[in-house]
Amino acid sequence: MSETLICGIDIGSTKIATIVGLYSSETDEVRIIGFNATPSRGVKKGLIVDIDQATASVESSVEKAERMAGHQIKEAFVTVGGPHISSINSHGIVAVANPQFEVVEDDVHRVIEAARAISLSNTRQIIEVTPREYSVDGQSGINNPVGMSGVRLEVDTHIITASATNLKNIDKVLNDLGIKNTGYIFSGVASAQSVLTDTEKDLGVAVADIGGGKIDMSIFVEGALSYSSSIPIGARHISNDIAVGLRVSLESAEKVKLYLSNNARRIEEAIKKKEKNILTSEKLGILEKLPDVSPKEIIEGIVGPRIEEIYSLVAEEISKSGYEKSIPSGIVITGGGSMTVGMVEMGKRIARLPIRIGIPEKATGLVDEVMNPMYAATLGLVYYGNTQMLEDPAGFKDFNSVLKNFSMNDIMSKAKKVFKQFLP
Ligand SMILES: Nc1ncnc2c1ncn2[C@@H]1O[C@H](COP(=O)(O)OP(=O)(O)OP(=O)(O)O)[C@@H](O)[C@H]1O
Ligand SMILES: [Mg+2]
Image 1: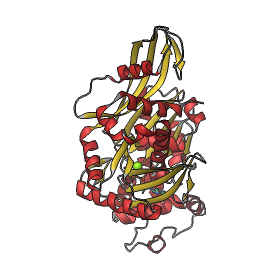
Image 2: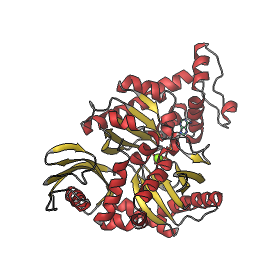
Image 3: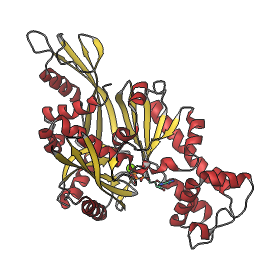
Image 4: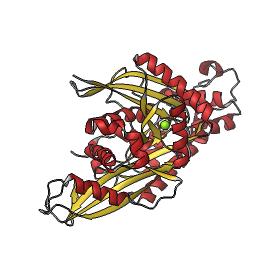
């Protein structure tokens, strides 16, 4: 029996979450053995804006997770998100090299390489290359072309790129802490790993991770990752609006928002019964005096318009992707912001699509705290890392350099791994 440590660091605008998983080959399962979430500083909308502050936050989170796990974190996968993310679907074609015209692994490597050859400014870096489907001699919809007969091999890939500067800053933070980066993973893809079902991906679905400062989105069509992007607003903007509307501090506004969200049903009943004093400073544990505003006014007058804005931006992204007719499974919302009062109900009305909250429920181990939409991307890092490692243990070790050098073998192992999860 062998056990392997898989670590992830989720650098969010609100919190830094560190996760330590232990994969056992005997049970073929990852058990969470360490976890910590620490308030984040120096990070805005997915961008590191103050390296020292961000490093201190990551250090504090990593140390606590290490203590809990009883293991030192030497390497970790790390989330990347925010509006600097963009994606493109790229096509590659090669002639099959084998004289018997049977596709071999090397042809697959070459065709992905061909698709990956997109023109990229030196301020951008590729962080993900996922094959969506292959075609052999014009026959499309192939999951794995190896062993098939043909002369022409084609691939459709999904490529995600990120700001090279921001990636360098993330690396700087990790380097300063002596942690090796085993790979950048777009938060939208990481969250999709932990909250989407295979059926949803096959039918077509969008995942929207509504964080504090941004919304990371991934769209899956016919089982394949097809679009990735990020919107520069998040749930913190709702708290900001409450602070402005009620003329209270951001801290108090956050408490009001959480109280309304966590007690939504009780508040709905109280509104119906026209109960008074539902929201009081004492109940919320805040020192400031709250103005005489009813929960209904806050929900409908302040929170509602922001949620509307969020969904109109999400709908805009879906329409920009061109897949608006291809996602019958609707939108799976996750991230802390998905729990905002009214988020599901308003979403259904505005987007006219099925909406559900994605809770990462597959985990085992120390998971009570982790099974929360806030940690969808955090847990996704461990799932991603695990499949990566199982696919190619040697490549896993060199993953960081892969992303810099784009060595084809390693890109393939990553691509195959991502692709594998799409197989039925
Ligand atoms: N129970 C809850 N109800 C409503 N909102 C919540 C709840 N818990 C957390 N939130 C909100 O979720 C947001 C934080 O979400 P999350 O932890 O996913 O963000 P993050 O990953 O740090 O940020 P980002 O991904 O944008 O960089 C905060 O605005 C917080 O107010
Ligand atoms: Mg996040």
